[in-house]
Amino acid sequence: MSVCLDAFAILTWLQDEPGADLVDEFLQRAAGEKDFRCFVSLVNLGEVYYRLYRALGRGEADTFWRDALQKSPFSPVEVTRRRVLEAARIKARYLIALADAFAVQLAQETQSPLVTGDPEIRMLEEEGVIPVIWLKRPGRGEQLP
Image (cartoon, rainbow, N blue to C red; front, side, top):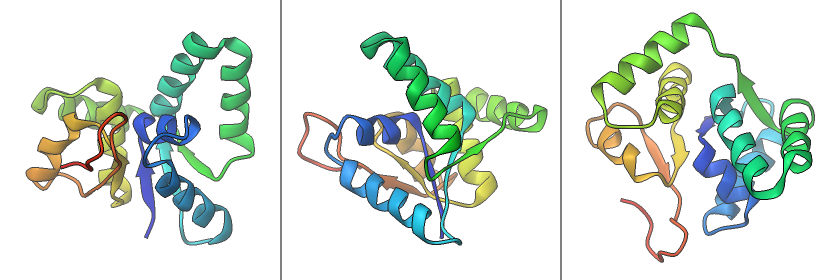
């Protein structure tokens, strides 16, 4: 089994928020097991980048980007025309952010559960579009759904 991480999951891990331990467990597995991967779309890495840039500055964001692509146990996935079209179709059918549509598309493609705490994804799980591993949402004690 592998997992797909969205920006919510990566930011949870980076900020050591509730659920970070689960993301860390997945990253540790990806670093140590050859058959386990933490897939992430470059679009979602870009989302993390701009949020870090705004909050901590370009230097921190650049360090994250470099490490995510070269040193980390993330398995970044390139954006292709086919993936853009599939994500756009998901976005057209569901009220989710475009970056979230790329995470959903990648979860479908890799047949991996999406790790997130983003409530926009709940409908897709309920409709059987993708399986989801839910993280706790910051400031709330419960897990979704």
